[in-house]
Length: 304
View 1 (cartoon, rainbow, N blue to C red):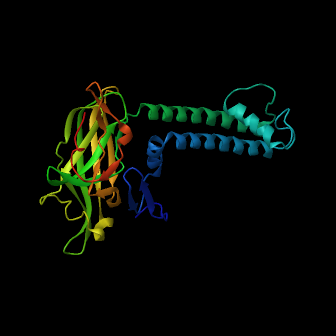
View 2: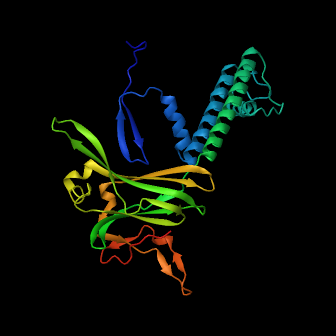
View 3: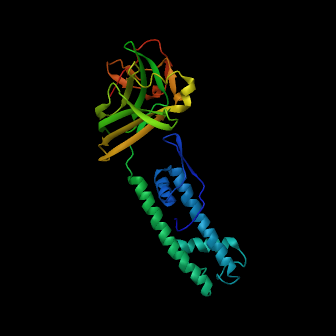
């Protein structure tokens, strides 16, 4: 029997990068999820949260000083929320200009607690910011769509991967998975994961772009799902990327998901490689996302 009986509503977690919604009946330690959210969210969201907590905390302390009555803070206008708010900012930041000072036991007790809060808050935010800066990220970009077209006479799924950084990723590996919902003969629903073989799943050095391809032949588990609109809500493609980043000197990871609506049928990517007048090859990443209806396979290829 549980020691504490607390009614908890189901927690719905939207994993933006995974683009799949999971429902869990209980989250044992929500503070762990919040910490990982702080590490994984965008810098804009992180900074907005830091500013909001900072301003909100100072506003709460300002109301506490006002509750102490007039004269609790010297040189502060009676009943002025703005004056005690600025006094709170000076106290939390340990600036101490000396013009406004607390008078009495309660105001000094609040100042004591606020000074401690300011030290802890500054230390926590510094640690989180450092953890975010030092967290290794792959800097890998996936094409927004995958295309299905002929390649050497075989129906083939293709998607592009690009290295957004100037440094190299060595021993890079790509894996393609079909995630599909199935039903057993007993009527139980389960999710199965089937790895789809790629023409080339490893690269010794990944520096520029990578065209990944999977042949949709009679042995491919994907063949029964493509073009079947009745199953569109029951499957998606998951791509995982791993490699050793030379500049970061660490293993990096990336993942991407293609939903059925992201897979373009009878299409091919526009070539991103052009030949310069001097005979050299130039990669134009402005065509990285562009595709056209499939007419031939002369634009398909892999370039590193």
